[in-house]
Amino acid sequence: MKANRRTFMIKSATLVSGLAIGKLANAADAPKLSETDPQAQALGYKDNAKAVDKKKFPKYAEGQLCSNCQLYQGKATDPMAPCAIFGGKQVAGPGWCSAWVKKA
Image 1 (cartoon, rainbow, N blue to C red):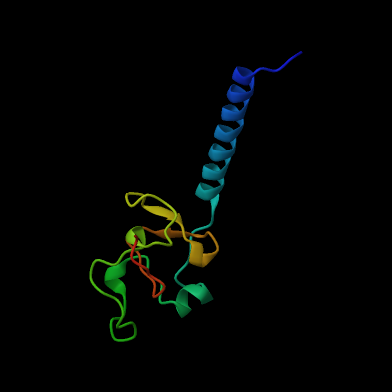
Image 2: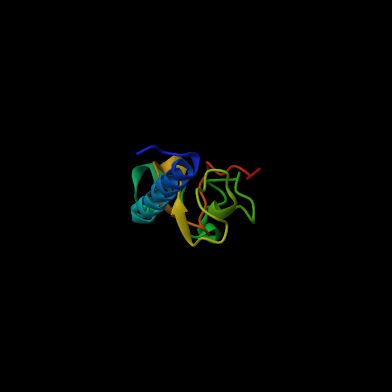
């Protein structure tokens, strides 16, 4: 059977869609980061940015949230999403850590 361009494009789109859906499913299955995790403690991670110790982390400023950080791998409206700094573990959107970087 001779493959034509149309068949190739349909099969390619199906493959890419399947891979994207698989990646999203894996991200949703990622474990939630605990505030007691050693790396989370070292970076001052809190599930709620309002709980940040401002004396210990003077870099923190009101309005800095995981959901508006460059490292947050979800939409700003997602309640939880993987974070690049924590090996893909899920962090809370309203959370914060000292690795926070303004989203471009």
